[in-house]
Every structure is written in C-alpha cells, then in structure tokens.
Length: 251
Length: 283
Ligand SMILES: Nc1ncnc2c1ncn2[C@@H]1O[C@H](COP(=O)(O)OP(=O)(O)O)[C@@H](O)[C@H]1O
Ligand SMILES: [Mg+2]
Image (tube, rainbow over all chains, first blue to last red; front, side, top):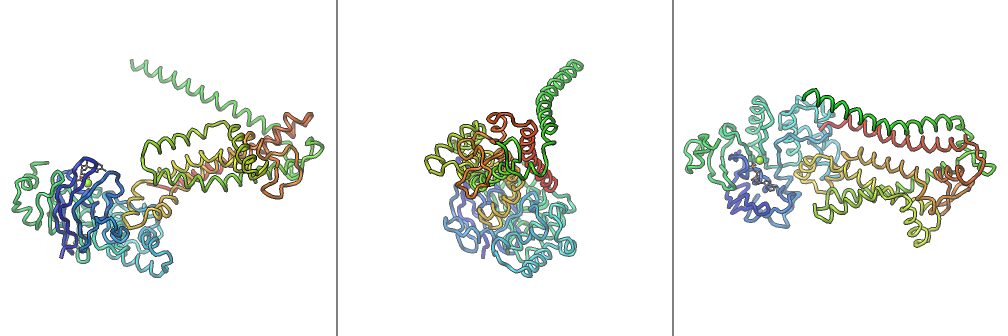
C-alpha cells in the first residue's frame, strides 16, 4: 500500500499554477527521487506533504493527498500529528542554537511537557545511533550544535526527526551544501534508513537520483511528467521530455 | 580624476568627523562638568538622608526611591503589553496596509514630546480614572511614554530571529505559539532587554510626564502606597534649580550627578547585555 498517494494534486501561488494534476505514489521503505530543472515545483510538492505551504499567504491547493489513507488536505487534518509523522530535512542544515542534546529532544520536550530525563536520554541515544553519530558525539552532547561540521549538522537534523518518530523523511536537496565525500556518507545513511522510513528526496543532481533512489519522478513546469522505477526512468524513459532532461539537453 | 575623488573623500571625511565632534564634545563637556561639580557632593548622607532646611541641605533619598518606584511601575505596566503587541505585530499580523500604518504610528509615537504624555496622563489617569496625582498615575503615564520604544525594539528583536528557526520548529509539529515561546522569544531576549532598559533610562530621566501626575514638591516621608504622591529625581532637580532660591550649587550638581549616573548605568547594562549575547550567537 502507498505511504503517500496524490490524486489530481493542484497548487496555485496566487495566479501562478505551480503544480498541475500530480498523481504519484510513494511506497514505504523505498527512496523516491524527484528530479527536474529548478523552478519546476519540486520543493512545492514536498511542502504539500507536511502542509508547510500553509505558512505562505495566497496558496490554494486542491485534489487529494493521502498519507496512510487519510487526506491531509482536509481542513480539519491534525497538523501536529502530520508534521511529526512527515518530517522535513532542509537544504541548509539548520540546527537550533542549542546544544546537540537539546536539538534532538526539542520536539519531544515541547510535545510532552513533563517527560522524564531518562526517557529523553534514551531518545537521544536511539536517534543519534540511527544517524550513525552516536560514537562520534556521545561525549559531546552538551556542546553547541552550531559547532558541528555541515555533514554532522545535517545528520543531526535527521536525528531530530527520528526523535519525534517521523516515518516519512522529506529531503529537499539535503546534500547541496555538502562536499562529495559528505554527500556519499549521507547517501549511505539514506540507504540504511530506508528499512524503517519512507524517503522522498528532491535533487537536481541526476547522478545522485540514479545512485540512491528506487523510484524516480521527473517534473517539468509543475507537471509530473514521468514516474516509475529509477532503472526504467534512466534507461528507458517513455516520455521524450524525460529523455531530453536525463541526457542533459535541458542543462 | 583618481586624485580628485580621493580629495573629495578626504573632505567628506573631514566634515563627517566635524559633525561627530560637534555632537560628542558638548555631551562630553556636560558629563565632565556634572562629574566635576557633582561628585564632591556625593556621600552616604546625601544618598540616604531626606532633604532638610527647605531642600538646601540634607540628602535626596526620597527622590531616588520615588524614581525607582516610578520606573519599576512603568516597566511592570509597559513590558508585558509592549511585548505582546510586538509579538502580535511581528508574528501574527499579516502584511496589510493597516498593519503597516500601525507600525509607522508606533515608531512615530516614540517621538512625541514628553509633555504631551504628561497632559494625556493628567486627563486620563489623574482626572478621568480618579487615581489623583499618585505613583500609579505617574507610572502609567511613564509606561505609555516608553511603550513605543519597547514595542519597536522588541519587534526588531523578534524579526531578527531567522525565519528558518520558525520553519524547522513548525515542521516538527510544534504549534505556532509553542514555536514563539520556545524558539523565537529565547533568541530575541537580548534585543528585548536592551529595549526595556533604554525605556527605563528614558522613564527615569523625564520630568514633564510626572509633573502633573505624581511629582511632589517636597515630601520627606516615603510613599506608603501606589496612591501616594512621591518625589522624583528629575523633578527635584528642577525644583532646587529654579523654584528654591539659594540652593548650594554642590547639591544641585550632586542631584544631577545621581540622575545621570542612574541613566548611564542602565544604558551601560543594556550595552553589556547586548555585547554578551552577540558574542554568543552565531547564525
Ligand atoms: N512563495 C511563493 N510565492 C510565489 N511563487 C512561488 C513561491 N514559491 C515558489 N514559487 C514558484 O513556484 C515555482 C516552483 O517553485 P519550487 O517548488 O521552489 O521549485 P523547485 O524546488 O523545483 O526549484 C517556481 O516558479 C517559483 O517561482
Ligand atoms: Mg527547490
């Protein structure tokens, strides 16, 4: 069954039609890459999945987005639950100006006010282990997170989501500020994480999409032109526009 | 051509320097003069005794206490209201014409002459609400006077917190109010404190707003409740400088020195807080 399913998803920024009749199916325990030239609506689509577009004025959305079978575009959707479940990793690693420890437990502290210290310690250990940072950082938990390297910061941001028990990870160009070595490590982590999570990654790096993803969607001017197994998209695209993009004719 | 522009720059620099000097020198002179003439008057008795012999001798204790009461009252009133208004304006209000007008109006209110606030306080608190000339009326008047400062600086502090902090917090399922409480406010505190202390300094130094609303000409016993009148430093200074003949120069300058020291001290605290936090934050 699909983890996230969109049906005739349309979105407008004022008069600008940014997503056009998007039908897509994101399966659990797989990595889905969204590729396409910049400005085609990749970030916009990701932000629909945890309703972050609500923060922007003049946005209109219609169609259906089912997460675990529930339409999250409904006005009475439980946003707190949705956003905990569908977490977002941003382009620039953005830890809070707090300690490593406090960054990870931030969500949990706010959500359950009188949580025990032991429980928080457990959460920190579990989350850092999931992003393979525990051994590196277990003695530095009180240090400011802003002192970490970019790659560590990005991992920490993922740990912060794991701590609130997200099961979908939306990643919007998570490696665009990282060097190739760090990028490779994050990709490795993604492969590790997909056993337990549904991962959707936006990237304009086609090699990356080919390397890490199981499924790929190609977007152009707000349309989801083609969606399927990564292998098929890259070796035998059905749409001429996909082929042009993949072979580099769009630049 | 190159030489010419270099010369223009030199001339411009000279005039800018001159303008700075023109501002700094008189202020410096005033401060030096007050310290020179006022410092000899300062001793424990001057700070802790009541005025005696028609304010020609003794100390200024009731005026110091009065000023502290008034400033405290003003902050108790203005800080919560100002902070809430700032939170509304920066976090909740949409960017509409009306809201932009409100923001502009608040900025401009900071420039309204203080005597206008004094008259306003007289009409509203003393007469209409029947609080009489009292610490309550005076504090409220001072509070209203410093509200624009507090709102404007707090708003700027809130708006300088990076947008990404809010986004991340919301994306973790944290509600808007919790985001403000747990992420935005803690990171805006230095700016808010600075604004508050600047407001305090202004409230401590003004005479006009307290003239009709609280200030007592001569009241040696300390106020017993917020409905009593009180002496206050700036008004006391005015009184002994212009209303009472033959006050020793030492006493006048001593009073001015205490007032100046109080205001400068508060500003210094603001600067230190700002400096400390600026060193700590790194985004
Ligand atoms: N807040 C906004 N208001 C108006 N238009 C926007 C806004 N955000 C994005 N857009 C427009 O929507 C289109 C898709 O943007 P985006 O989803 O960020 O593209 P991508 O992530 O694929 O580069 C772009 O043309 C962009 O200009
Ligand atoms: Mg984008």
